[in-house]
Image 1 (cartoon, rainbow, N blue to C red):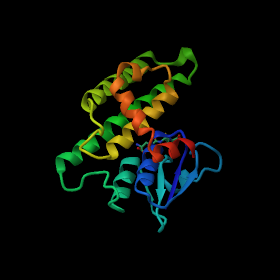
Image 2 (cartoon, rainbow, N blue to C red):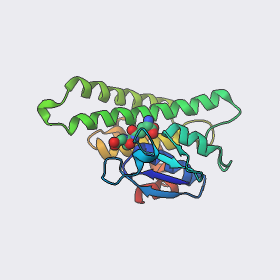
Image 3 (cartoon, rainbow, N blue to C red):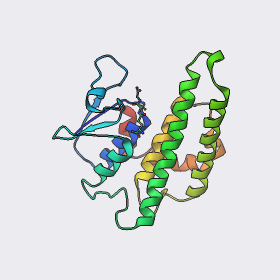
Image 4 (cartoon, rainbow, N blue to C red):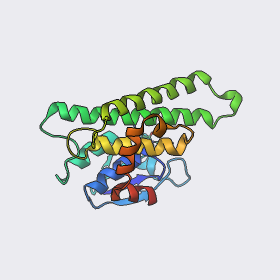
Length: 202
Ligand SMILES: N[C@@H](CCC(=O)N[C@@H](CS)C(=O)NCC(=O)O)C(=O)O
């Protein structure tokens, strides 16, 4: 398998964390879709990363589909519950929450890189407010638990950590650690994992 992506993409980080946690052999190729010579549009008609190319050349997109597929490739560990429909939905809901934070942060970033007089204040407010609410929701749901869902690591944890890394990158002024100390403590523990460390370096 080959994974096309970039170091900064939170959707890519989530998928990389899944591959690393499951210890699945893969080649990670840095490929930014907007750079000249990018292969991304050739393999993924949407022109987006992450794009996972299987050994038979089929390209899998987008990140929830990749994560779900890759999770079936071995059981060590199972990151999306298979038999318990409610637990499965809850993990996927965490993923949607984390991806939604990222979607809004990407929208905010898209506005902020425009000239100041062209930035749409309503868009900035709407998406920043969504991030604020989603973080509060995550903090309430997590409470003092070790894992987002159940009694072991799941995709929920990997998606949330990816979203928080991206917020640190794009919105360093947002003091989510101060507002939600339980999220901060959980994130600090997650950051000790080899998968997270590798995804931040390579
Ligand atoms: N819903 C998609 C979102 C993927 C996405 O938007 N990726 C961004 C990078 S973070 C991208 O490839 N954008 C296209 C571009 O930069 O031209 C997923 O979860 O995979």
